[in-house]
Image 1 (cartoon, rainbow, N blue to C red):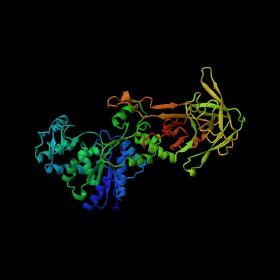
Image 2 (image 1 turned 90 degrees about the horizontal axis):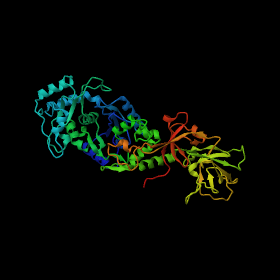
Image 3 (image 1 turned 90 degrees about the vertical axis):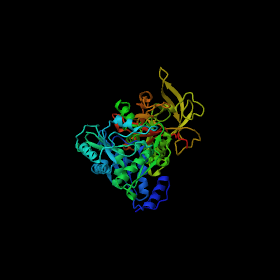
Image 4 (image 1 turned 30 degrees about the vertical axis):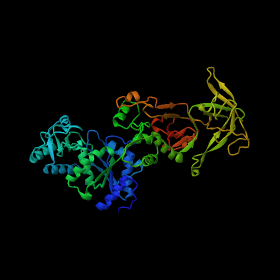
Amino acid sequence: MIKNVEPNNFIEDIIVDDIKKLKLKKIITRFPPEPNGYLHIGHPKAITINFNTAKKFGGYTNLRMDDTNPEKESFEYVESIKEDIKWLGFNWKHLKYASDYYGKLYKIAIKLIKKGLAYVCDLSAAEISEYRGNFTTPGKNSPYRNRSIKENLKLFKEMKAGKYPDGSKTLRAKIDMASPNINMRDPIMYRICRAKHFRKGDKWCIYPIYDFAHPISDALEGITHSLCSMEFEDHRPLYDWFVTNAGFVGKHKPRQVEFARLNVEGALLSKRYINKMVNNGWVDGYDDPRLLTIKGMRRRGYPAKAIVDFVTRVGVAKADSVVEYSYLEACVREELNKTATRVMAVVDPIKVLITNYPIGRTELVAIDNNPNDKKLGNHSCTFTREIFIDRDDFNENPPAKYFRLTPNGYVRLKGAYIIKCDKVVKDKKGNIVCLECSYVENSKSGNDTSGLKVKGTIHWVSESEAVKIDIHNLKPVIKQDAEFNGDNLEEVFDKESRTVYKKAVAEPFILQIPNGTPMQFLRNGYYIRDSKFDYETPTFINTVGLKDSFNK
């Protein structure tokens, strides 16, 4: 039963109006990807709009694989798409395939031929393109356009029977070669293609074109509203022409409604470019965490909730726009701040010897697992005489407002004591190898009676407990400020978009955290363990930094 809805956007306005006019009993939408690649950041918007809109009205959404191009489609992509949609938190009512309707699509094509609305054409692909004209020049009729219905039926059945070679004939709709909308200039409905279909095998040697199969599949499924991106706006007259002439009218005729697609600044989403990067070994697969594929974002530790939140906040509009990548990062950061487990890790360690701390003495220091959720409790780190701090947390010649460790300066160690740097120990080449420090005995966090006030707090890891880890810090694959023109991918690809730190160390608690659990390396950023590179040394990749660069 349809729910009463207070519309919040133009799509919901249209649906409310259709419910009244057509007396619809249920709202049914669909998400119809072609199984020829992996989903990316552009897809969650269409997924979210279709699933959430139907749900809001008490209806449901089908997942339909538009598998009309057997040369590029496979079960691998089908399973990947299903997995990604479920991971995002959505569940479809029915799983459908365009190939489920091949028999019915063929019969509808016969019906259109009998009505004089379709014909078999012998023009080549190049000739069809030439005859079609352009935006300023009307098309001209194919010399085969006036074949008799009887001859068209005979030829089309012979096409299906495999009598003719690939590309020698097509079935075209007979509409208007002078239409200002080029999509209406006798579009192709069927082509001959002897390719093995991943579901149907060699049963068919003719395959329906998307523009014919898609609207008819919607109608056969009882889809009430075909919600899609603005790139299909010019195809809507053709969509309506096919479903109407196939006999679907009134409440049985699905309505196509377009919304602005999601464009993320600097995102490289084209299968062509991603394939090139994968095949050339520039990235380590379609799930490379530098890519904005769903699998890449999942591997990088982007929460599904943050991705859905991002596309929801972008909203539903008709005008295309470009959203800052930093806005996506802000949504990820906001979610991880609430859920990520806190640990201490040192990316580029420098040794600190606390000279006045007793030899052999150890103390346990409590670290909150997440200060925003006390229910998550805390864990203990062991404080000892010899620790590591990050090299960036010490500066011999500090700039103004530098509140970390300096010669003769004080800083607090997270959860532990205030220390003072007394001596900088260097090797013969002038490299710092150790900092000799002293601690203020009565300054322990939570029980500080020293009276000292220090502005800086830094993280640390005990040398005796330090776990060696590899850290991979990532950047976008396209160089910052590079101008990508579609043909200069190798030139603009950033070969330094992955920086590996092999000397990093972390507290042992990090090994108790299950794989796939997001964590915050205190003062560094959000990270996740990356099993793909997890060889002898545990490997962690950065999900997003701590600082928000998005201009709210």
